[in-house]
Amino acid sequence: MIFNKAAAPQQSGLPIILSVPVRPLAGLTKKEDNSMNELIGRVFSFEKHVYPNQNTLYNKLATEGQSPKALMISCADSRIVPEHIMQAEPGDLFVCRNAGNIVPPHASNLGGVTATVEYAVMVLGVRDIIVCGHSDCGAMKALATEADLSAMPNVGAWLRHSHAAQKVCKDNYPHDLTAAEKLRNMALENVVLQLSHLRTHPSVASGIARGEIALHGWYVDIHAGQVLGLDGETGRFTPLREDEHLPVALPHARRLAGDVLLAEAAE
Image (tube, rainbow, N blue to C red; front, side, top):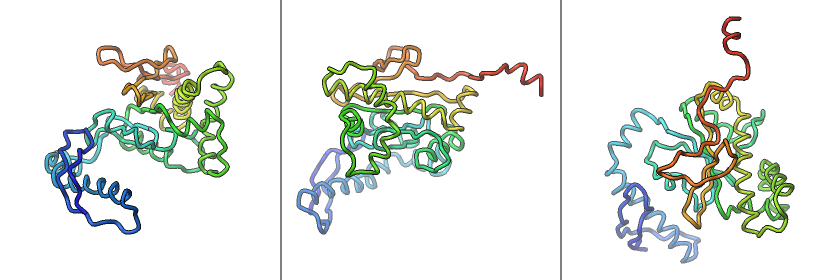
């Protein structure tokens, strides 16, 4: 099968993919075969065009290691690509994606999100953590409509980490909202909830106390191509504007409840 010309993702100046011969994949329909071969063709384009053009950057990352500017916890939805949204280069972002951009509260049981957060903070020294929700989220839609998830028990169990957001929406918003309004509110409240869960993680809590970690809550409106940010002072989401102050859920600032001077004197 011949991979025809197709545009690569509009990121980092990726070139148009050239015609590349791709062997048909067994067991797939013609449509599935074409779709998978298109993706494989992009791998070839990366090897032949993207990597050579960014060889210096990749060599530096391979030699010196990574120092990402932020940890971004986003939804696994294929329409939400953190690196694309932020126009990030390799090495800029440490990314964790899952259904519903969920951060389970810290507990004794291990989990991929917990391990990722801990590694990002304690090893990579990340100073900014972003929880990013989005419009038309399937996970949030299941919560907003109270969908029957008995056929998907693992999904149902995972979404229990968002039940508090579901309760907030059910008890505090008008009941006559449209389905779209309910879904939007659910996604926004879920971002707020997951940020609160982040603060239960010891590495994050300690970093916040030292003033070394800031938390950001974002919401991507796919239809409008717009990103909203949570303003921690007002509790509201506002559009990110290039010429305006960036809304931050919890800015960098030392946060200790006790009297530091007395504690230091006691030592």
